Structure formats: structure tokens, C-alpha cells
Length: 400
Image 1 (cartoon, rainbow, N blue to C red):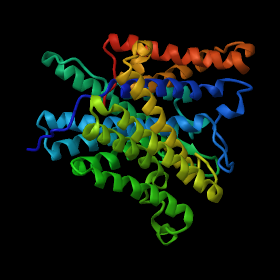
Image 2 (cartoon, rainbow, N blue to C red):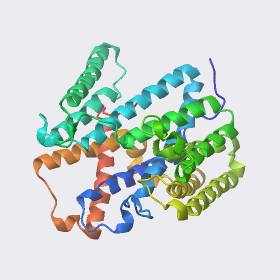
Image 3 (cartoon, rainbow, N blue to C red):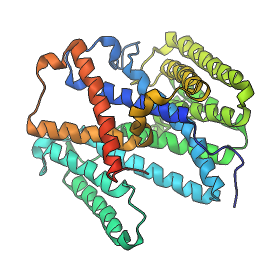
Image 4 (cartoon, rainbow, N blue to C red):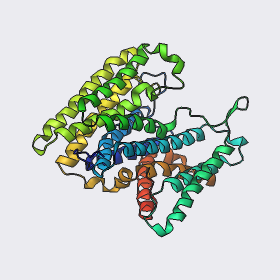
């Protein structure tokens, strides 16, 4: 059995950074309901050499996954878990994220007109199944059988939904496919790679930094054409985003390891300066590679990787100073559910959109247009977070 002497208590700045990022993610994900959204806020097209505000949010979330990861693993080590037990937990969490990701990305590609279950009913049942399986049930031994039955029923629902699923086109009908894995799937693969690296290299900061560089270089090598000899395995065995997705997460791991090893109250300025320096170097890498392949989220170019990593380092440096050093955190109290029940918060809009679509409810166009529409989406994001807090208090909270 191995134990860890590294800090295991997660920083409040990470939770608040996560909460703000989730708030922004729900905000930008609501743009599809609006008209006349400023172009600079939107995702850019794959062929464009550009980045919108929306293109930065997911990379920041992956970075936050990396920030949290060392604390979570160290916490398990402190409780006495062995490497094998922690690895089993990592695999279980990865499976859950991949499973949810695959179902959600196939929802986007279904042929609802030929399915036995209407599209939005299918969506509601899907999210309900996720809640049945991964809800945090009370620790009541007398109800253990009930909770097990609820979990099993959730898997049964997933099996039924998969059985009736039809995708593809009329000319080329298809069943469920991995596609691009979906947001949760990309998080799952990034989490798996970075968790395993940290688990076995957690006492060796230089090896973790080297692993981060390897992922960045893998992305660079792919765009430079150096990996062309590996094209035969590209569709079956490849790092997601050609290394970009886990590179974001590994950058977060590096930031947390630097804190765990080098932060002291009397040298906080040095730690923050290191974060800013890493951010500047990442930005230089991003802008330096942009002339070669452009900046594109859809193509996961080196420029997008570098710029978003740089932004993540610098933004976290700000949150670290604001929350940990200046002790200014009460402003984020309303957003706490998004930082503490992030998966729940992410999934609730799926049910909301399905319900309002089935009901045929829609706001007047002037409330969904331009600046008024953006305010509406900001309020919707806050509403979802407050709703998450409410259902958490009612005993409904997902955890994988």
C-alpha cells in the first residue's frame, strides 16, 4: 500500500474557476436559441483561421480537469488506496464519461423520423438513465437493494435506447458510432491519459512536464506531417485531438504540481509569476505556429492549443490571486453548484431543451435577438446553476 505526502485538499480557486467556466459553457451552449449573436462570441468554422470566445471555454475546462486531478488522486492515496485501487477508479470514471459521451454525440446524429421513440423523449430518457446510474445515493444499508435496482434500471434504459437507435441517412442507415466522442468523451480520454501519467509519475515533476511536452509535440508533429506513416492506425488508435485535448489537461496537472511542491505563503508572487510565464510561453507557441496551420478549434491546431493553454494559465493565475491571496470569494457563492456538481449542471439543459421543445414553448424573437438575447442566455445559465443547487439539496447529484 502506498501513501502520498502531497497536499490533497483542493483549492477553492479551482472550484470557483470551474464554476465560472461552467457558467460560461452553459451561456455559449445556449447561443443556438438566439439570433444575431456577435461573431466574436461564436465558434469559428473549421476552415477559418480564427477563434471565437466560445472556442476557449472547453479548453479551459480541460485545463481545470488537470488542476483538480492531482488533489483527487492524492486524496485517495492519503486514505490508503493503492495504485491498483486508484487505477480501477480511473478506469471506472473513464468508462462513465465515454459511455455518456457516445450516447450524447449519437443523439446529435439520430434519424428521429424512423425511430420508435420520439427524439426528445429519447433524450429525456437518456439523461434520466444517467441520473439513475450515477446519482449519489444516501448511505442507508436498509435501502441498498433499492439503490442497486435503480442503477440497474438505468442501464436497462440505456440498452433499450441503444436498441431502438437509428442514425446515418436513408441511403446509408447506421447504428450508434463513436463519431468524435462528444464533449464528455473527450474529457474521458483526456482524464484517462493524464490520470495514469500522474498516478505513476506523481513524485517526479520533470517527467510530468515531459509528458505534457510529448502531447504538445504529438499535435505539432501531426500537423507537420511527421505522423503520416501512422495513418493506418489513425482511425482506430489515436490520441484525441492529435494530443491537443489531453495536453490541455496535462498543463493543468503541471500547474497543480507546481503549487503542491513550490507554493508557500511567503512566495505566492513567485508561484503566480510562474503561471503567467507558462501562459506567455504557451501564447508565443500558439501565435508562432499560427502562420503554418491557422488557429482552429475544430481541427485542433497547434495554435489553438497554445493560445488556449496560455489563456488558461493566465486566467487561473488571476483566480488564484483573487481567491487564495486576496480572499475574495463571496461573489461566487451563487455559482457554487456549478463548481461542486459540475456534471449535474452540464446535463440539466438537455432535459430543459427537450421539455420546452416538446411543449412548443419559445420566447418572443425580440427576447432572443442581439444584446437582449445575450442577457437572456446569461440569465438562463444562472437559472440552470441555481436549479442544480436546488436538486442537489433534494438529494439528486451525479458523481462518477
